[in-house]
Image (tube, rainbow, N blue to C red; front, side, top):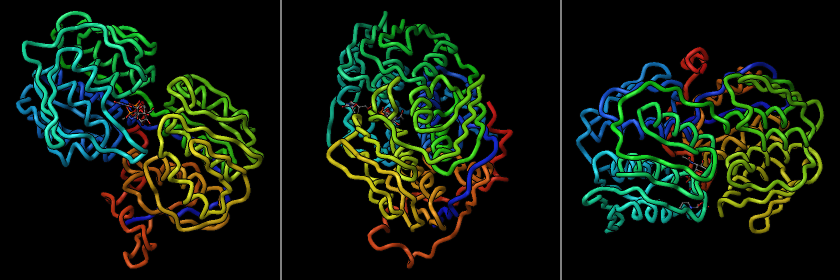
Length: 451
Ligand code: UD1
C-alpha cells in the first residue's frame, strides 16, 4: 500500500507535458475493434482503466501490445462477444463495448459497468438509444444480452440529456447500422470529436461532433488505422488548479487551451494570469486565489464536473467566498469531508457548496474517487506541513504519474509505504482499491508522453 506524501506551502514552477486523455483513449481503444486488423494508437496514458480496457480486448480475442505510449490492437481475431462481470465493473466506460460489439458482431453479453461512485449512474439512455437502432437487449440477473436480429438500422435518435457515454455508444453501434443515424441532443465534449476523428480515419463517415447533432452513415467497411489521442483537459485542469492553490508560475505543453475555456476563465477571475499559445498554457499566480461568481457545472462547453473538486480545493486554500453548484452528479462532494480535515471551510446544502478560502493545514486524508483524490493533492500542495493521501488506486485510474508530474513542477512529493495497522479507522476499504506501486519519474519518461 502506497500513499502520496506532500510537503505543502511551496510555489510550483516549471514546464510539464500533459498526458493523453483518459476519457478519449477509452472509447478510442474500444472503437478499434470495429475494424479487423492492426490499429496503432499513440499517446495512450498508462492508467489502470486503460489496462482494464486492454484486458477486455484480449478477452474478446484481440491481440494487444504496448510500447511506451503506443498501443497496438489487432482486432482481426475478435471472436468473443462477452465481457466478464469483473472487468465490466472496473470502470464506467466498459459500457461502450455494448455499442462496439453490436456494431461489429451484432451481439454482446455483458453486465452493468462500474466506475467512481458519484451517485446513481444509470445506463437507461444508452439502452434506449441502442434499442431504437434495432438492438434487442434483455436484462437477466444483472446481465445484458444484446443482439441485432436482422441488423441495426440507422434512424433519428434523440437523447434527452447530452450523455457522453450514450453519445459514444450510439456512434459506435451506428457505424455497423444500415443507412444514416442522426443523433440529436448529442454530448459536445472534445473527446467526442476525437472519437469522430478516429472513426473517420478508419473509413467511417461521421459528421457534426462538437455540435449537438451528429450524423453517422453506417455500413461502410472500416479498416485499421493509426491515430493519436488528444491531450487530457482534466489532467491539465489539475495542474492549473494546483498552481492556483500553491502559487507559482507553470507552463503546460501538449495541451489544447480551447478545450479548457470554462476552467481558464474561472482561474483568471480568481486572480491567475493566463497566457495561451499553440498547445501551451502559461499560468502565473502570485496572490491568494478565489472569490469567484457562482461556478455551475454543466455539460461541455460549461464548467466540467470533473474539474469541480480540483477548483474547490484551490478555492478552499485561497481567499473569499465562492458558491459551487454541482449539476451533473448527485454524490460529487465526497471529497469535502477530507478537505475539512485540512481545515477547509465548505458548507454543503444539496447540490450547492459554499467555499470560504483560508489557510489549510496538513492532515492524513484518503481519496474518495478519482478527481476527489487529485483534489486532495491540490489542497495538500497549499497546506502548511506534510500531508499523506491514501487511496491511490482511485488516482491511478486517471493520472499516469501524478507524483512524477508534481515533482517536475517543483513540489515536494514522494511515495511512502504505509503499514496496514496505521490505516485510519474506517478507511481500510479505500486504501486497498487496486493500489499498485505508482510509477517513479524515471519509469515514465516525459519524452514518451509528448503528443
Ligand atoms: C463521462 C466521463 C466522466 C464525466 C461525465 C460528465 C468518461 C469515461 N467519463 O461519464 O468523467 O464526469 O462524462 O462529463 O468519459 N445519465 C443518465 N442515464 C444514462 C447516462 C447518463 O441519467 O443512461 C446521466 C448521468 O447520471 C449524469 C449525466 O447523465 O447525471 C451525464 O452523464 P454522462 O455524460 O453519461 O457521463 P459518463 O459518460 O458516465
